[in-house]
Image (cartoon, rainbow, N blue to C red):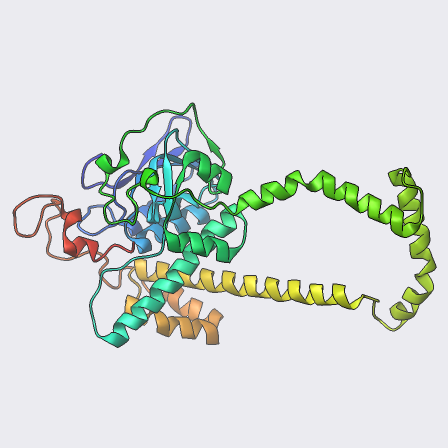
Length: 376
């Protein structure tokens, strides 16, 4: 793959399509923009799209734009992590209906980054924007792997690295394809020095939320035995009574309470003990909080994509977020009607040859100007 073409789409034998992401994600000084890739994804008519990733990440906006385009497509999306899916690349991986880790591959999740400058008020607004973006990204991992949002938020904040096996155990991937094999030194392929840890070997072992769920499943049989024992004791039947006998006794006990229950039914209600009612209220509150967070994350992703599409400036994100709160339907119609690329999404005045502006050559991705545009 050429240095310019960090992402490309290939036609596969049998009618499939393949999306290759094998470099730093981002359109700055590149011939291929994320918006162009998203448009090409929309035009794919194949029933299955294979996405192959080996990338240290890059622009958060571009990564989200590609991820959204893949999720919106009707085709089945199969993601293969061939080497590294870090930062924005791990966000793109979450678009897969199936995620396959290659032998020796790694995945990394962390908070959104930005290099910027400005006065105190501007920097505070940028910090708020990064928090919202990190929350939105966290919701993708939590939705994919399951588990508590706050647990995943802590893993994102800590910069967490996963081996292929750990990614599958955590629920971020479905399986490993093939026998284990050495993939070489990732640091020799990509410059990982800007991260807190230069790869999984230098990072602590991840705390995997799904491990508690696995342990709970292993206790299921013991829990059922304890439940049957408790029912026998409360119903006053023999310790060796089988399940059918226990259920029959339970039916009789419930029938005796029918008269009391009928009174509540005639009044249009049900009888619930105070402890259970309190637990129900707590679960409802948790569910409402989860829905609120999910809706907020979806709004953030929607507006971030609009920025990536060049519809309005990043500085106006907070303005449109307020509009979405006050009139979400009208605001979506307004943003959807905005023409894409109304604002430039790539710098004007560069010849696209991938060298420094001083003519000295070298990798432009290592320049301060390029890093200033990376979302991670």
